[in-house]
Image (cartoon, rainbow, N blue to C red; front, side, top):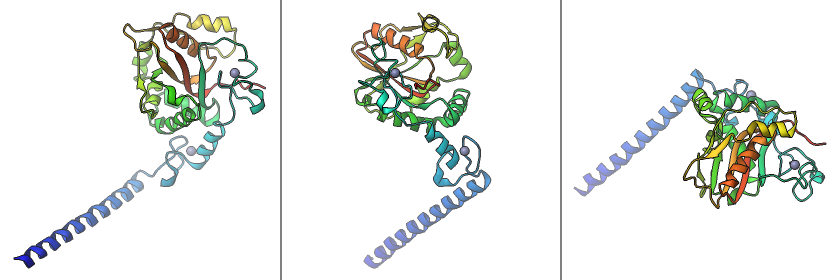
Length: 267
Ligand SMILES: [Zn+2]
Ligand SMILES: [Zn+2]
């Protein structure tokens, strides 16, 4: 009986091992077939890539990393040399009042980052992994990640969200990993605004967004450290108006996290 039981046990182990071997080989065969039928391509330029490269080809990674990194002003996000920053602010931000406390950005709005940010906004949501990785790294380098209690996507007008089907900033937030922070969509856009012109007077840009945002009744912002998330910062008027509304609603601190800051390098 004992021998038989032992034999049965061994046979059982053999069967399990054979099954594992089969499953493992099937998995390999399947991934090989998959690769043959749908070879991995770069999600930015469609060049074929090796599996180790992730979502992008080497060239696109290089280009992307070129437009990220570098020193920037923590108040406005503009590119600025290390010695151009005094007390955390560039020459243009020094002594200037703003509702936004600090900003973290992944890079400047050019080359691959521009193409990918635009694509992401226009329906290419598969880019969320790469872009999510970039905002996550930017947040880690921003020195305020540990203080954030609420993430707030810069809201789209409901007609635009309906048309697009998603808010790209909310998709980015879903890629962040900050354990204690929650997401709130209680900041809303009351009216459609014109595209922010990169040039033009500051007064004009502020007028364009004045009164465009509001908070919902029963919002959670009172006394909280809030981080606004957006894909592109062009003039900063939108982010500052959102920060103004959030502070009026009682927010203690308002930070911003963006993918890219549009061409505003400071000499
Ligand atoms: Zn590529
Ligand atoms: Zn600045």
